Length: 474
Image (cartoon, rainbow, N blue to C red):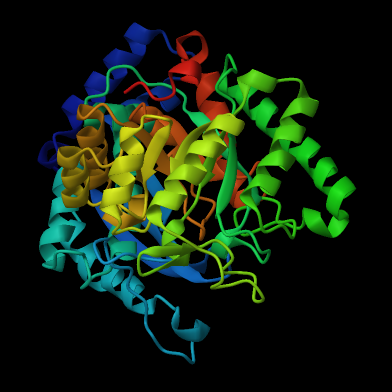
């Protein structure tokens, strides 16, 4: 084939002429680079390859990482993982071979991506997020993504979202905003984990997390400063009262002093806030994770203390009275999973008191059916969205829309098994959720989310909007 025949076959002469004319109009100082970029933009991007591998999360437990390729480059994503899972959340596929990573390896999920999902997605337009996600759902054919694995599907879904943003030449958060129809993006209020308990730490504290919320900050950058300074002051307070060994941290980066009472924890945090001088600008949130110490209809706040466990059970009514007292005595504005994940009755009663934000985490499992039920029954007033519980970007967007339409608060949340992937930072901005929970201002897999939000705020410049006092406004 001659050069002219080749040019004619691919209509290259016209395309090259258009690129040269564009370079002339732009008066570019580097015409070769300009023409190269112009030609690249003229080619619609498609998914050309999807490659998965097994990596380790922040706990040293395997998870799925995906490299998705288009004409524009390679886009990487990984799936986070929780310590527990509910019956109504998407299924994380693990091998179950006790001889490999104690049964936690994910080679089946990796193989499903490399052999099945890849074949289904090659040639698809990465900007069509809902079609990509639906193709994987159709390929899986199960209600909870148990065939291919939610960890496999989610990693690919996030990678495709990043590729779609690149194809549209917009930041990831802007692409997510466009996908969801969000017109005004905002920087969320961070909920910094400062004290860890429950299953996340080796102390005797039953509740899983005590968090600080810098609602009085003027910018996200200032909020990070407040959170970091409070964390450092808390380290000093704990060291003074419990020795340096009390400053060991849990899996999410919160300090884990050997305390057993939630009031002890709150007193430590309150003292640290006082030392910062920020006072009313910082509020407190609690993740009780009550399902971890619920036995039947009773709650055992001493379940981690061998000589006390089982001796002082609390009823649902007792728990409500305890929460009322705590909210009266401390600047608590949000309580997550205040009761067992199936204790809808007491959650509804407590939420109805309108004392604070009542968050459904384990209660809702990011499941649309459970969210709809909670909305209809006025069970709680906020959603904690964990993307791995639902399995695709599209479904995550729809879940947030459900919550916002009900005028609920929305928290985008990390998982205890995290990676260096910063997707949830962009997700919180793009969906304008007003709240993000990504762990302590400590540990790289947590900090990378907060650092990404700092970059986004810088990029937005004068257009940036920190949720601040409007943290619960949908």
